[in-house]
Amino acid sequence: MNAKNKIPVGILGATGSVGQKFVQLLADHPWFEITEVAASGYSAGKKYKDACQWYLESAIPKNVAGLEVKKCKPNLNCEVVFSGLDSKVAGVIESDFAKSGYKVISNSRNHRMDDNVPLLVPEINPEHIELIKFQEYGNGFIVTNPNCSTIGLVLALKPLIDNFGVEKVNVVTMQAISGAGNPNKLKIDIDDNVIPFIEGEEDKLQTEPQKIFGELSSGKIIFNEIQIDAQCNRVNVTDGHLENVQVKLKKFVNIDQIIEVWHEFTAEPQHLRLPSAPNHPIHFFIKNDFPQPIFHRLIENGMAVSIGRLRKDEIFDYKFVLLSHNTVRGAAGGAILCAELLRAKGII
Ligand code: NAP
View 1 (spheres, rainbow, N blue to C red):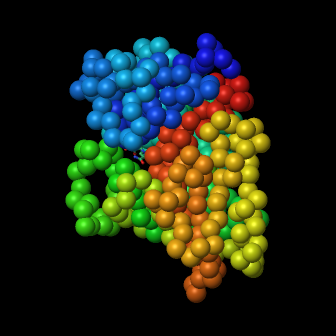
View 2: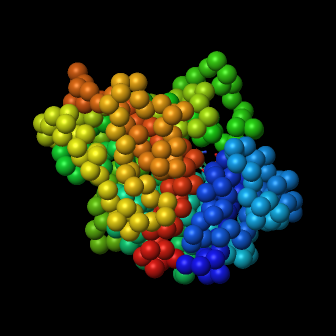
View 3: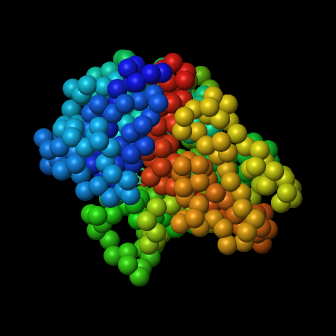
């Protein structure tokens, strides 16, 4: 695809933590071009560079810095909108865009559990895209990306479920600051501290995988019965969620078999060579103090999950540690991969 026929896209919530990541990741995208940025009434009317407290390490892309921030009204000049909207407002705004014919790819929680809305992880449940046909938005639709901690967990579990079956999971997360919104506007005391509560997070981690691993049957998702218990903590790390996971499998297997299925795991995004797809969705480390956020969160441009410390568990069967980048694989990068899959299938 040449620059002339790139698909015009807008970003809702473009000034926020996830919105900025969208701007950064889409700056040189081979298929999509940012034509619109939108946010709250407070930012609307300003140039993007003035409205946004940019906190990423790279400069604001030149083609976006001078764009005027618009209100989140469905009169934007684009075909697709990526949403990084505050969940207090995302539900209604995203529905309005879909009803007006826009293709909405959202990171917000509001529509994730709607019956006809795919909760899409391109490596896991590409067949759930079929649900779009049952939505009542005319030419528009909504596709959602899971919670930032869910995504690392489900990618690690997918090869285990497919090869051995998984009965139960216990997960304890250590989640980065950027997951709480723009770090420049942080409203929590995180210095020298750990916050043992993230509102709504444990419930998402316990329920979203059941939909993601659910079976599509006659236009409906039959939820998977996997049992998950979660505890979530906010820690003083800029980016990258670490998760301590215990699993009970349906079959007896040895450690090498688990490492092998993680190592061999590839899926549709890899076969289709989607631009944002990691070559290997899972990277396994033997070194006993890996993975670590500062060293491993940017593996494969932040789109892969790093796993280590696989060992026997006294109560479950095995335990391990995983790491995934919360604003890349867990938000903007994951949503862009969803859009790439939809494009490859001719739906965008
Ligand atoms: P954030 O930094 O607080 O950004 C929120 C965005 O929403 C800003 O652009 C803000 O615009 C806009 N907004 C707020 N009120 C609005 C209104 N009334 N009308 C229109 N726009 C409004 O939040 P975030 O961390 O980027 O998260 C965004 C969404 O993604 C949330 O639903 C979150 O749960 C989800 N998510 C976040 C992560 C992560 O790692 N951060 C990961 C996965 C999913 P102004 O700047 O103009 O106020």
